[in-house]
Length: 278
Image (cartoon, rainbow, N blue to C red; front, side):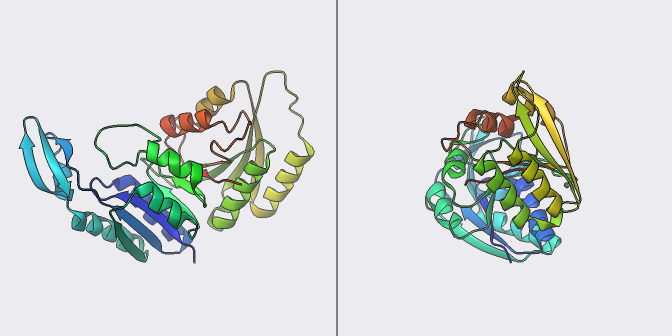
């Protein structure tokens, strides 16, 4: 049985990430550990969002907005209902500490983490990835799976590959953690600069051979041009895919895995992103 961690803001639970985590745990036939982070601050919510109130208590109106404090019990009920529906055993942890510190500590003893790329506790909008998520991606001791806003299942697994040890490690980690996807299409995706030789290296050929041992259908796709632009174009508006990336900002000079490129994918592509470090 795997230990999957789901990171949740108890004040403002991200329903899509909870649904996604429950489905992944169900596919893996394992349990789910949800860590709910509480805070003592009040968060502004627009009056036009009455459906949000069900997760809060102590509502105080201030002009056109309201100030609210989380009702953690309702968030717990939401997660319990999703796991019950998915047939997933749930372990709940409620914490008021620093989410980054706690998550990184727990990552040492987890198989992987599921988190909303916009996760934060403070009011306001940071976009994706939030600063907290960036810190977790940089320092996690297990892979991180970023949840999409809409999840329609997985027909294709896309492995971003650049001949580095980190990209190979990410591919192997995903394959070992998710044998359930062995019958999905597997794509080894590479980005080459204009004029660069497309001929496969020895490492690429051996990687393809390894993938063919683990997946029923494997193909290689080579994109030509600027990595950031090509990756965005390739994944834009795609569904039923999951994307696997190597090192996130850990000194890797590869054009494919620059932190800025990963951030762009996280912001603009609504697909599950699996990120693992070597």
